[in-house]
Image 1: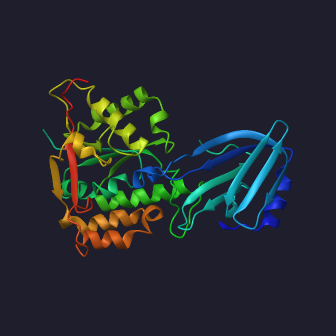
Image 2: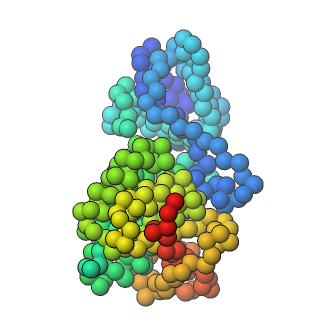
Length: 116
Length: 223
């Protein structure tokens, strides 16, 4: 992955509007966050292969970046994004890595389902 | 009874930190070890330091890493169950125990090594331990293999007592380090500190890296 270039990412987001997409969205503190620090309240989530069609999407911020997508019925939002790539299967993969390089958030779009 | 070890863990690298020396002690005596690894580790938060993997490439990278770790450990029978990382506790528990039982019937282990259910911190660890113990309990009493269980939950010794099996694995320190290093995406940021502990350069005699600690699970007790 490379550091996010917002103009390039926006160009990709514009290309994804209006067609059904498979989404992987995830936030994580790691499974050991509360084990290492009992005062730490650990919360996280992921869903894989939800299908959504966006009316439009936008990337904002100075880095880490935010992304918001509007759909017919609602919204998708993610913050803390730092890096991105478009892989060999034309999937748009974005992630937020903390100071140690560990994954904090992932937001990915694909025209085909991600492997289960 | 011929000796045979069955290791049941959820993540590629679970076999590295607290168990590698014990596995090496067996394989170097010619005792076969079968490793059932339940997930591909595909939801790991560590992606290399600095990151060289991403969420979609991590599973293939960790497959290669586990192959190398098994080569270092002398494990030739690796069975990946392919469950999504983090989802072990949510998969069908009866089916999982049955799959592990099939392996038990296949290899007839004298010793099973897994996590201590309820005392292994990560939900996948606890679920792996539960499933492995339930699989062992499908055998009649008296025919069940010994189960070495790993526990590291805060305060576990107050409930379980001291571990009854403590193995000094310093003779395998260099090889154990190679196993840990094989899991590059997960360990590249902490190798130096582990090397110092394993080679005795840092005084930490209680380290689970140098002394592998197990509780013999009471497999013949009724639930």
